[in-house]
Length: 225
Image 1 (cartoon, helix red, strand yellow):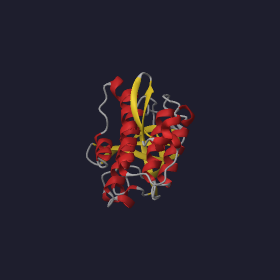
Image 2: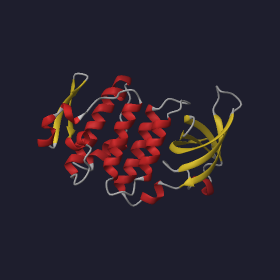
Image 3: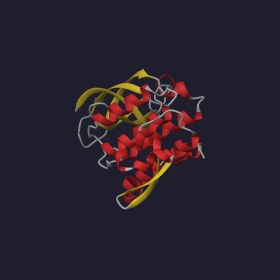
Image 4: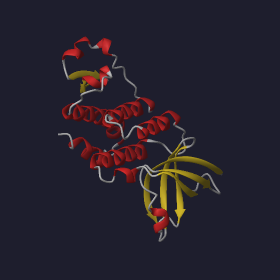
């Protein structure tokens, strides 16, 4: 099997002495793992950072065995934010969530486009609300969509935090996520948005499969306590 694509690095781990195994979320093939020989060398490892966008050539002799990547940097995303702890936590969070939740070798073009759009808006003033919308889109695209139409909650206009029930479980959701109004959002509302999305993901994906929720994502949420 041989193909070429572009994608975002979502995990990496050392493999033998001078190689690493990358997980890449690709535009056409979904999450794919591959070995990068020489991946620990200074020349290559500096750009093999989480969420960096790379061009890859994939080769595998068998569908049942891990293949090999040749890589080329397209966009060094994470180094732009090394001095911004919240944004680095956010990038680490989305990488961990995708690495855990996405199945191997299944195309998720809507999720990929949503991620690409998010990273293109990462310098915006409202980058955190973009991130929250990305998490909600991910939940929806993975098969657990829910309707938070503001017409169903007429009282939402008078409260900043609203209680809703999804599949017989109660959640506190900030009004701005329902109303899609993202101006003048304070830190408390951001916290409640992160808390709502985490609780939803834990109940839908992580707890039923006995998977630990990513630590980086908890740290991000706690930054707004």
